[in-house]
Image (tube, rainbow, N blue to C red; front, top):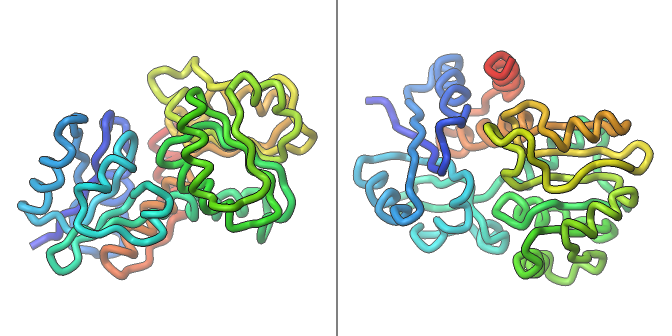
Length: 277
C-alpha cells in the first residue's frame, strides 16, 4: 500500500508541491502519493488529528500555519522550536514531530545563485515577520558578523522575531517605510511575506527605486515567477531570485526526511519552470 504524504495551508490550491512530490516519487520508484489539504484557520487541530487517524506519514506546512501548528504536534525539534515555526512534520513511532528547513533551503539556494560558499559581513534586510522569516532570520543569525535588519508592517511582530536571534548584535527593527527609504544600504533583501503572490500580483511590501550596486533581491514567492518587487529590482540593476529553488529544496529535503531517499532537486526545478511557463 502506498504511503500518503501531504501539505496543509490556506490558500493551498496554488501549491506546486503535489506536482513536485508525485513526479519525484515516480522518477525514484517511491511507492507514495502526495495530497494538498486546504485547512480553515479554526480547524488546524482537527485537521492534524484527522491526518494521523488516516495514517499520513508526513506533511509539509505552508502559510499561514507554520507557527500555529506547533501546539498541536506531539514533539518539535529543538531548532524548529527556537525558530518558532515548523514546515515539515514526520510521523515517528505514532507521534507527529515537527522540523523546520525553510532557512537552510533558502540560504543554500541564495549561496548557489550568488556563486558563494558562505556569507561574511553583508547587510541583509528581511521583509516580513512570519514563519518563513523566523526560520531565515534564525539561520542567518548564526553568522555573527552579518547586519540583519527586519522590517514588518507590525513592529511588535518584528521585535518578537528579533528575539529568535538571541544576542545577535547587528539587528535593527524597522517599519516598511523606513526599510524603503534605506534600501540602498543592503547587499541582500529577502521578501518573505505573501504580498505579491498570485492573484494579487500588483502588490509589493516596498517599492524598489534605488538599490546598492550589485544588490541581490530574493522573494520566496514562486507564483508568479517574477513578483512586482523582483521586477522593480531587476529594472534597477539587481540580481534577483524567486522562490522556486527554495521550494524545490524544501520538497527534496522533506522526501529525504520521510523516506530516507535522496532526490535530485534540479529535476524539480525543471518541473517548476515547465509548470509556470
